[in-house]
Image (tube, rainbow, N blue to C red; front, top):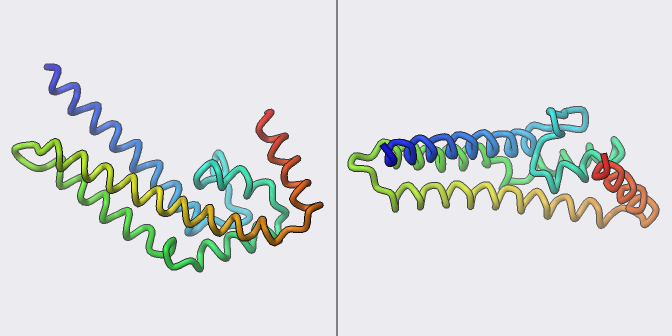
Length: 146
């Protein structure tokens, strides 16, 4: 019975990872200045700052995110990683090492996509004058206290 619970826990964990990855990629690839999910979408380190940007700067950020080749094919990369996880789940007999490797590969794709987004955001922030960075810092600080 313990093995059965472990299998269901792994499946539940996989589903949460897939949902998070889909939200991240969807926000990065299709999101825009007016697009906000329940929490703004995207990785939290990007979303919190993006919400603090003025509309024009946020628009520039999303334009760059959408035009980035690493992020543009993000959906396909996540789909391939998800396919590997599903194949590992269906393998008989179950290959725990293969399953773990496919989950790690999926996490690596997520991290690479978030990393590209962070680089683009850093470029946008670096272009801001000091006064606008200070305003952004204040907005982010207020959001964190809510």
